[in-house]
Image (cartoon, rainbow, N blue to C red; front, side, top):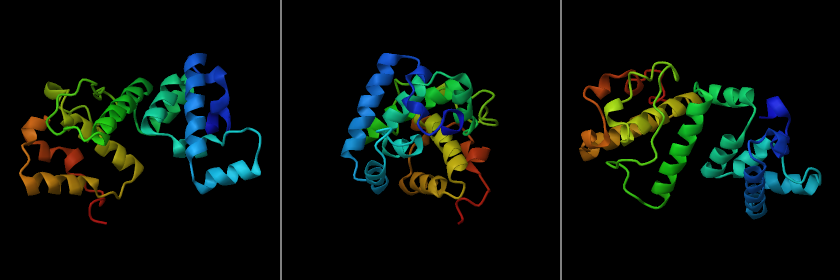
Length: 205
């Protein structure tokens, strides 16, 4: 966003699909900033009076998952949408759906809802050509189950933090408690798929 439209480009309602929704997002963000006790927000407020809101990289740090999803959904310039989604090897429409699905999942977890064998109502846009290589690793026969979400989450983790331990931790939990993975939508021979056999050293460091 900053590379395409400047540090405060998100304050330009001309970049939004809907002025009404953009206004609501601004009000919600202002509320989050007012409640924030982050030092970088306090620093901005003490050093700058215009614009009132901080640059986009600081603003994103105080946004909830839902707010981030809504900001992306309202972003109009196609090249900017593609650039953001491209950072995660996704196309822009797929990335929007992924953010909405992860927000939905995050909210269920926050309310201690059961997710491991749930049939989701907010579906996940399954990969086809993007992200490359994932099309044959999802389970299209169980598109409303958690398995596909886990595959996309692993993809995001591999992109964002290549040396993460999340894959190993997840596999350890499945093995330790003898989880019925079929109820989660895991396909047969799932452990042989590349996403679960990642050898970049992420789980060893």
